[in-house]
Image 1 (cartoon, one colour):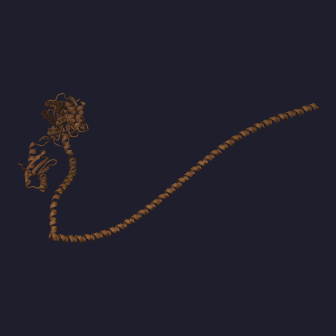
Image 2 (cartoon, one colour; image 1 turned 120 degrees about the vertical axis):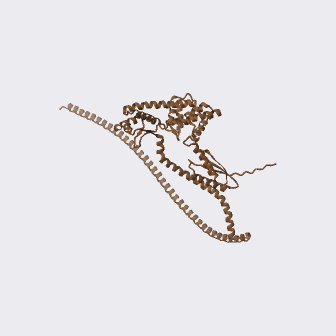
Image 3 (cartoon, rainbow, N blue to C red; image 1 turned 180 degrees about the vertical axis):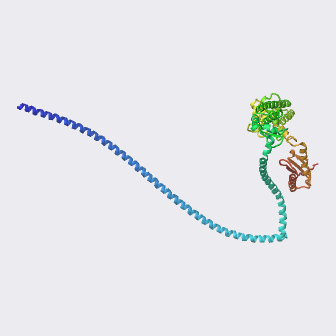
Length: 504
């Protein structure tokens, strides 16, 4: 190999090594730079974490310090409360000791005062006996006499108080007794108002009414809506229903079947339909006749039908339709006398109890139901108010309403209206007066308020205040033992003294 080649080779090797070194240095420099960059980033993050950790540690330390301070304060407060309570207990113990000492001193003083009072009482008794020239026994006797006179007056008030208390107790017991009686008698009274009896001429008709396997009687009950009871009562079939119109339909239908003799389900339906039409005509006719009788025109047909149904309703033994027409006549007379509206009074009186025709269907008081029915069919409001206010739960604001309230009370209270004959009424009034007049010292007596009160006028010279109380009680006892009457009777004894002089 020639020197030139060798020299070129050496030069090439040197150049390649230099280039390689340059590249290596360049890579090393780049890596170092990246390492420095990463290190700086790591240092920065480490510094941030260190700072945050330092801050968190400071917060936790501060919180712990505050909690420790809070616990110390609470412990201090508890200690202070215990100290205060201990001081309070000590103070109360000292106070109790002082009170005990005062009580002991007071007991000694009271005992000393008792001894002094005993001595004074003995001395005063001796002085009184010398002054009054009375012994102890004589003085006690006079004191008893004076006390007796004073107590006699006090007894009057005591007797009145005891009597009033006894009346209150008796009233409460009477309420319980009445409820018990109502409970026992409700079935009988209900039977009277909800049952109709149909007489049979032939006992064999019961079997025909019942039918094979009870088909006829079942068909009749379905068609009329009335319970039909066929029992062992001879010659009688019982119809039971709260609806008086239905009972009337069943009665008419049953009488038709008994008269015809043909009893089977198909025939029963026909007869019941005829009976319904017949009773409906009778109801409408009764309502129209009532309106015509009292001179009221313009009543809606629907209301007239309800008025006609009142023919089959009774209240306290009084036919409701007759009661309504009677009220309408009286209301017209009174309204004419005082200058009130006659038509309004008659109209309201005729319809005042129309709600009783549907009380078995609609809940509520009958006068409210009557007013609602009247409003429903366009009756003027002044008439509606008179209907609704005929009892005391609504204030009567018109003259016509007051008239209706008055005539309702008159119609119900007159002798004979509610199963009480005039003869029995007058006899009971006379018996009340006779009982009162039978006692000595009675000047006059009057039975008033339909026999609910008897007023007795006594002679003042014969009967004093205490004797008047005794007389009232004796009269009441005699009435209770000798007479029969509903409710209660008030015995009112009147003692009056008048002194009259003239100045001349």
